[in-house]
Amino acid sequence: MGFSSQAGQLIAKTQTTPGTYDPTTGTAGVGIKLKSGSFAPNRELMILDAEIGGGRDVVDAMLGGVSYSGDFDFYARPQAVALLLKACLGTVVSTVASGVNTHTITPSDAAQLPFLSVEHVIGNGLEAYQYTDVVVTSLHLEAEANGFLQGTVSMIARIQTAGITKTAAPVWDNTEVAVGTNILCYYNGVTLPAKSFSLDIANNFDDDDFRLGSFFIGDLTPKRREVTGGFSIRPNDSSLWRQAVNGQASAVSPGGLVTKAPFRIDAKTYATIAGSTPLTPFEYDISMPNFALRPYALEASGDDVIENDIEGQALRPSNATPVMTVLVKNDKAAVA
Image (cartoon, rainbow, N blue to C red; front, side, top):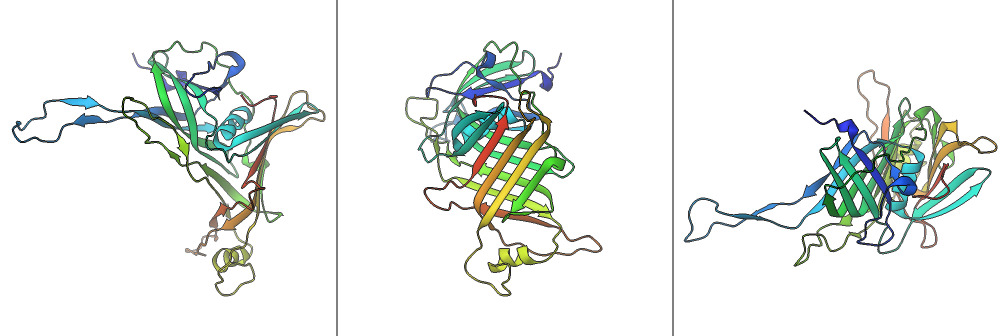
């Protein structure tokens, strides 16, 4: 008898107290539907070096410290993505008007980002885990013109407990998925003829704080945050290339400064939020006020139409202005 991957589940919620697992049952957690992914233990079998006076064979081994990490692929749904963005960025302010809940999520400058408690089930009866002190080390979102909005989240957990009784009936995020035909990208206030987009938020957590007397990591500390993104276009002219390579759209030779312009991604669902007046779609509105394009090449090949995959770096304008702001509109009054 085998175990089907599709019978598993991933439930997450914001954890109240470091080191203490918060139950994810009932409406407390969000069931995140996955395409693939699982946590993996990061642990080594420790073997003694060869010793003078010993034999040629390895005679013993022990197990050392352990952490847990995993990448999870998913179709982006508004309740789950709001939770992952909160864990990844840190600060959320929620308001409600006319039946629409708007969650404004911005990066935190605090030394610690929110922890998650996570229930992860592999197969139907193969194994079930609780993970305590889980952090989102990176979050990736992308969409193509004829595709779905989807993402990948990378998590690191400090503590695992195996063999738990799984939640019998998770509260799944069954909200709608946005598609490329309802997603727009804007650069410097102008709508881009983008064929696709991508967004990456990386917290670069330090995950090797192992301490004497414990199997588990002592702390998970975020290092420098990096926010990058990009889009694919068929260019109408060479202005973006000149800006990326020479520093300004009109420059004909290289300069030392870069142009910083706003980059915005707006994704809506065709389905609307129940009870909203007027009827309002679920939405992700992602804005970066200072976005610098990375240099790239204009390349031609045979009779192919010229296309460019353009990438860029989000830059923080000032201490008072966040490097990015995300507005998520959904049907929940609070982010779990």
